[in-house]
Length: 112
Length: 114
Image (cartoon, one colour):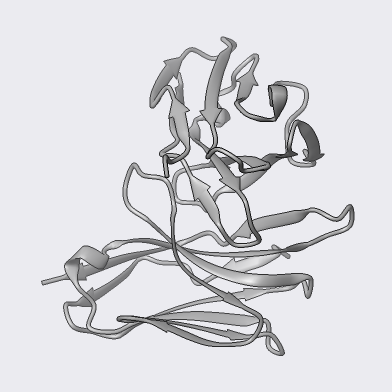
């Protein structure tokens, strides 16, 4: 079974610039998650999709972050404009069960 | 109060030691309890999961869940240098709205030295 694919692996941008991350989940997984992991901390849920609908975006900074999941498959997460505190690893995960969450390798974002 | 609290690291042990990692939680809605291992510059990978209270063993790893105390543990026997990683506890359950939610602890960094 292919894993969760994320791109790019690394991104360095200046503050106030925009950036987008892409995720391709495991085929057939209805639920897709975006997590933010700041260095030394556990992953924090940003947004959760069930098929192509949002079920939880309570911790997404909506003034600068947006996400979409077109056709219930791939997803993109965008930040505009970026702030220094957005420097983190952005992890995408997908799930087909209550415990079977599979994570991608993440996109490491550095905002300078 | 955070929903999931995890013992802070880093934890440094000699090879062959028994390692104990712990988490507490506050929300009774959690039903599945997981331990993830995360190597540097990699995404978390599922190590073990337990449904409800009890013990589960897999090789050198044992997961324990005590729902009455809202406390979970991971034990690593005969620890190896290859076990050096960050260990994240995570919990999932159905919340209002009928969807399953996965919440992580902060992670404990473990170093096993030869």
